[in-house]
Length: 298
Ligand code: AFP
Image (cartoon, rainbow, N blue to C red; front, side, top):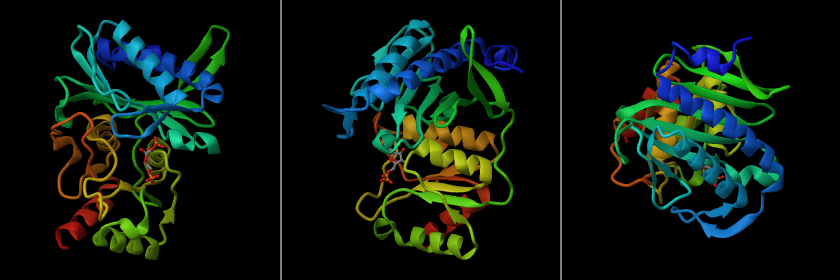
């Protein structure tokens, strides 16, 4: 059994290793709090979405533990209007609790982190690494620091939770099997509707739960495509470039896939504000190219 600490030595820069270990240990606290902190608060996040207690709690725990390492220059979060500043060199953008509207149905939730080398907002080509946590039947941490995608699972031991290697060098399978798209079919732009009809005709299975992390994990393991597409009334989609799209795009690329906004690589987008959104199509490269070509031709 290889644990996260041992695995990171010699494989990842020391500062990113420390941040990943911090995220792993903090995620165990979030998981423990989850059943007891699910009510809605009166607050809304900068995108106008109602916050739950656990959104606020997870945000506070991750922001304070990351800043306490002394390695972080700023933490920007989907749940905060302004970043919190530190004195380190790594700029962290995070979605501390992805999919919180799924709490009441007990579906998987997640947390997403991007580690940038420049002040935010900046383009995804400034990512030093990224990670996501899945709070599902298992608590897992998946990360890349540019040398493959690796997943660790929390296992309770005598000294608390240890994160044990579950999958090394994940890669999106060649033959795509699943797809999942956010929003409603009637709102998708027309080329996306045609694309989905062709996926269905080819026998790909619809797998959609409404938590990006959970839905992406299916694509990572079964091959296929996840999209939160451009909508007719919301051409820039729903998911945020810095907090969600770019960190997951880096993991996708490291797992052999691609991520696009419909015409450009997600990692090339330079958002002008922290909470800027983008249409997002990511997963098996062949399918991402197909949807790009349909959008281009429309
Ligand atoms: P919540 O955090 O408000 O539950 O939103 C989750 C999310 O940002 C992302 O995880 C999903 O992919 C997407 O929204 C689902 O949105 P739809 O409900 O519009 O399909």
